[in-house]
Image (tube, rainbow, N blue to C red; front, side, top):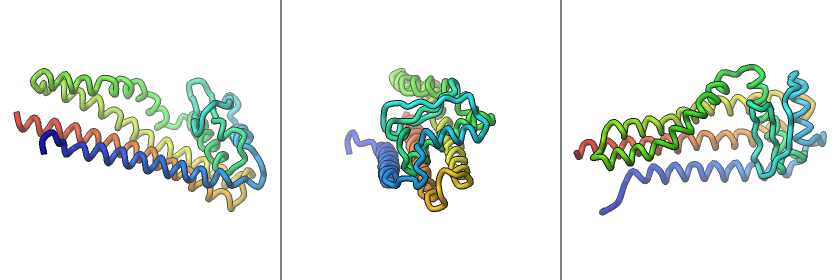
Length: 230
């Protein structure tokens, strides 16, 4: 078919995977956000309890706007909990807070993948900014092989970043589940519910990595086809 690019199916597949993962984590979180912890602690109280128990006293907890915008800032030692999480006593909210504390513990113990990810951030930002302009410029300049190769390599940095992110996120979730299972914040029936929430959240990172890989594969296929035809 004229103007039909069969490799665009890879982009559609990546978007579908990301969309399904996002929908799954949202539905899972909403489901277990309705389940209130029997001990009645809030996510903020749980986060502070875990930090203190781990001997971490230099991390500030703050509430931020948004829904599931929770994050840990290693540079400023700042744990941010979203409005939907901070004051909630649900097992889902406590699980999310514990996950972010997991990142704080990684930072406190100099967890290597976390350091690698932080070091990759500037390179990833540069790579994603210049990759497509370089590829387009290479095409304009009569399929300049060097520029196209550099552009694809720059885009590949984003995939490397996401692959490094996977162990960081999975490890933070494992720490969270272990801490909650061995602590006094949740009972034995509530911990498996937290695990379901965090497993669903982890799938979004897997889907993002797969989507980026498919996009990278598309660029390689497009370059290869044009190289062969020229």
